[in-house]
Length: 97
Image (cartoon, rainbow, N blue to C red; front, top):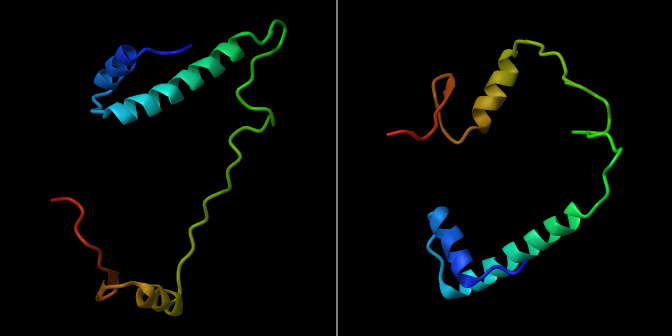
């Protein structure tokens, strides 16, 4: 499915993207290739094939959380590895104004 330049511009506008002519060409070709691949997938015969979200049969394979304390040497090693510290805390730059 080959998309026109107008269709690509419309999609870019919906996505609030400002694309140059070069980018319109590039992304238009890529999007057309993706849509062609989807058309191929639509042709695959799936009658009688059971839908699956995954194939292993495993569900929620999680490890148990274990709370363990740190000894003083481990704490000191972690603090010494930090770029900056304040007392017994690791100091980080503010990320929220």
